[in-house]
Amino acid sequence: MKDLGDAKKILGMEITRDRGSGRLWLSPENYVLKVLEKFNMVEVRAVTTLLADHFKLSSKECPQSLKEEEEMSQVSYFSAMRSLLYAMVYTSSDLAYAVSTVSRFLSNPREKI
Image (cartoon, rainbow, N blue to C red; front, side, top):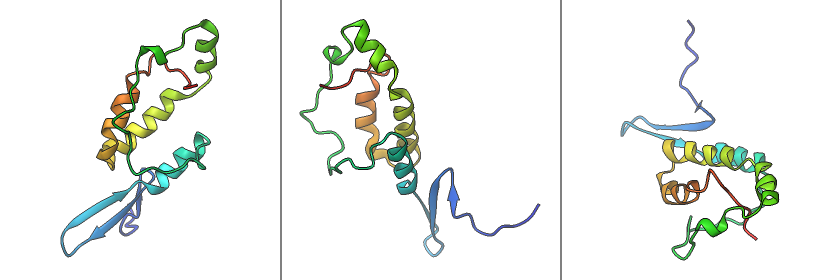
């Protein structure tokens, strides 16, 4: 075994230490950028509110025809949700409400028109 020094990254997230106060932070910035690149969303507009109160989803948003179901089966919605869930659990608990709301439609997602 070989000592490589202090860890700088773990599971795609940067580690920041404050030895004086005994604190440790994980930064998801690079991880989130990779997720945005993977799903072609690098150019999306940033918002300060993760999910507005007026944003409501319902079963009306789910595919209504076989054609829509087939189109949505090509979208890696589940993979995107899994990536967001990972970031939420390990670093950004402020994502919890938004991830919870949109994950309700994992079994039957539909592209918003």
